[in-house]
Length: 398
Image 1: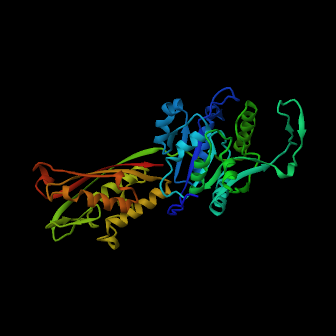
Image 2: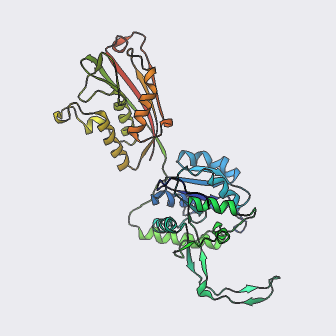
Image 3: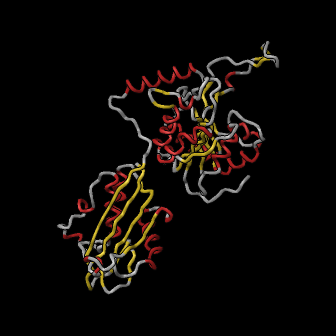
């Protein structure tokens, strides 16, 4: 088997939505279910479960071109579906993050998988390597002759289960499964486990977790939605995260006898920024932008200048509070672009140090943090070397 990678505890989901819907007569993933596309409800169930750091959606080439940009803006990674389910899974698996410990594979036309089932499947996969949800058969099953005209025998129903998704795997197990899968299609990838001598754990599921394959399935799904609507006294619709923007600005006077701190980095200079805190205009502008992106005011609300007990506070503490506010709003920063306006000192040699510092403080990838500087060409208080300004634009997913 493939060697297991460094464990991070992260789980990612692959949702396969590239089918043509031949039995339905049209694309089942984009049929409306209680006024919204089936695939939107499926993705929403996985987002709202809170179990995944990334969700990858495999779409047909036509739907990738048509809907892909909107899904990407909503924070959902998209992949091109292949000619078969197995090929679609291979394409999507290439986008799983390095170090992901668990991977869930789910049908795009199965919108009723709830958070409890998803969590149970992931936990069993972590223990056993693979886990598959299933329900007992309701009807008697018979095998038929090759020409389909006669029944041959009746298997013992108690030994049979109807399998569903999400089917969950340790990363290495799914990698081995895909490597071992012949170049043909499978109705579900867990069939290949038997070739590898791996037994998937059974996770008891419910009959509610249906796959919408026929027009009759859609009627049943509509009935389920009606039951949910009547049971809920207040709407609890969970939104797919969307991108929001925020803008921040700050200015502080340069004075002698103060350290110059920008973006959490101490820079050697005869003057520093005057302020109630350490005067870090970069962190202040960025934090105001982040708070603004979720309509949570500005840093002065949380750290008022009239509060003498926080005199000289590090702006890192202000950033930590800002991240707490974002978390309470179920939002996270995905991009920061800061422009510092200063006549002195020259900041270009410090760009990378400030980017490193901001990325660490904000718990972001450095590649998502931009820092640059401009001068005022000798104009105004900034141009005279009396102050430093910072403007910041941020994007968050909420």
